[in-house]
Image (cartoon, rainbow, N blue to C red; front, side, top):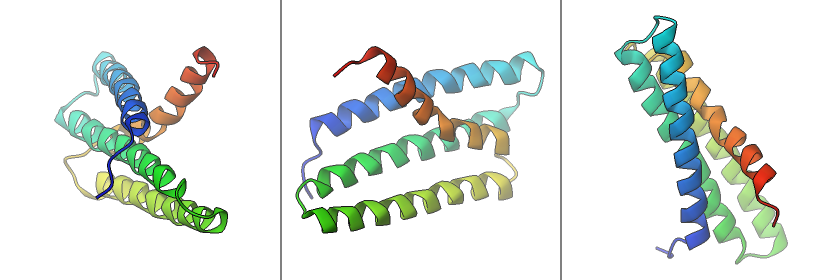
Length: 126
């Protein structure tokens, strides 16, 4: 197994932290509106794992693609994107089918990494 690049670990850590903070905010909203129960917590954990795992796998794929030719790198990235979207669909499907997951609490954290990337780009000018 190849060594995981420090940039992949650092960026995944940032995405985890951002997603965790937003997940806690989401938990608070459920609590404030009186809809919080254990299914919200479990659904949030599933969504958090799916979102951060998706980002980490993307980082590993990019790291791998850097060592390939342009055509092979494009194919690898397309395959990775398709499989990661399938994984996110499976996470959402599990959240829907398994009764101890709140579907909304599963799906909402899946968009938190995208928000985190957008927010970070406002402050980092590299």
